Length: 243
Image (cartoon, one colour):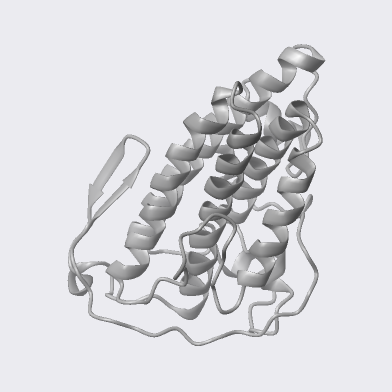
């Protein structure tokens, strides 16, 4: 069982700016395939999935994760262009493309509009949190431009943050004026929707693998066993790394 099934209450990394909740336009549900890494799951029509609808907290979190997975893809794509000899970025950005597409497909399956209307690198159009991901992208790319080692740390940071944010409400959502006031009120720990749980489990499995890959490359520079957790606790990271 993934260790991140527990609630994380420490180690948040985010921007504490208040953003209001926005509206989401619905459209007709459809059958499509959700693919995450090597896992492919055919989803049924909205009318046959759970109760056929998402509550506000579930939808808010799913829309957020759509752009967070795109953030990972975009940053890795950019860093890969900066450090072409570091093949890990090119390998993992392909996986992150599948992740962000999988979340998009789940949003559309339940009849809602994709918040991402522009697929260009570094562009985030979500009404509520596009500003947050734009700032995050710029900060992470700036950090990664310092050196190849720092770029690898950026990759590990993103994977730790992603696992935290999949499991529970991201700090930026909790701090927004939207009625979601606790970390336990959205994310994998709060949903009883089996479709979303399966999707999030698959994303977490991918992030486990990606974090291990980045740490392996980092420790080629700093020595085996010397990686220090950046977002999660050291205990949680060590468990993922089987230490």
